[in-house]
Length: 352
Image (cartoon, rainbow, N blue to C red; front, side):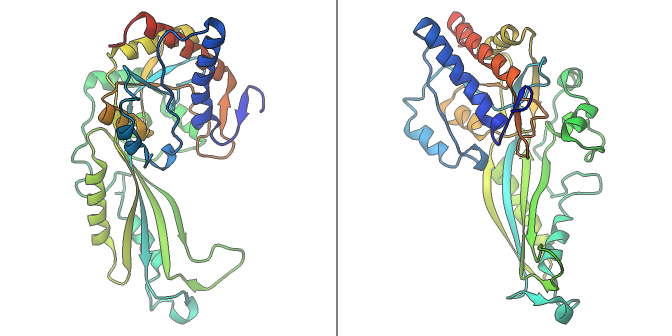
């Protein structure tokens, strides 16, 4: 802990946010002896790998999980004094691309220039995935992408983070990507492809003159509403097959598929959450889109038919998935208060 921040992997994503609700339940029970509404707690620890076992659990225990609304806290707000209700999440598709060449590692002095290096071939394939403007270049990839109307785009521009804010939170000096869109738009209403890692050859100290027999890359796609992960997967596989040089062999393995999720901002439960934020933070929340993915959100919507409320307490610079991840303790306390007020709001005004 340093200053008003607590540090550790998962502090913000997502132990701190989840624990705010636990402490709210504890506080309410210690104060009044009973909760004002019935609450079912579902703790799920596989979100980072796509929640592969959650779907079966939701089907098997659907009777026990019936509710009027599901409340999730795994999203950021805009600033310590600017709470936000998230109403849109991107979906995700994660793939592992492997390229193989010779049957074994080779000496680059003996065979360099005569055998296609799988690591080089992998980079050549990856280079075909974007065009010069940073747009995903896979044929058919954008077919289902539909942009919001002018009114919503104007609202996003008014309440969303500026380009400078996003660059500051990313500790980056220059932006990259589709220049006709703001950075907030690029990370929310536009799909994206990132290369999360490349493995191949020798990466130790000193020199090793080697042509590796194989190389792999981790690819992550973020998909906007109406894009279907399985359909995009097929498009990517076809593209990689076409882009693979005849001198090597490529294999694609699917690691994660998660649907995008959209929440109706006019739901009574969402309005109750907005009132709870007003009471907990002292200011009304804005509504924001998120570029992240929460597989359980779309699962709850699809399998249980539950309306979902996305109430975040994290900050954009909490360094999720990076060293020195943190959670701002004043937000933790405000999150507890907001969760308490949400229970009251739900009790006083039925969400359905």
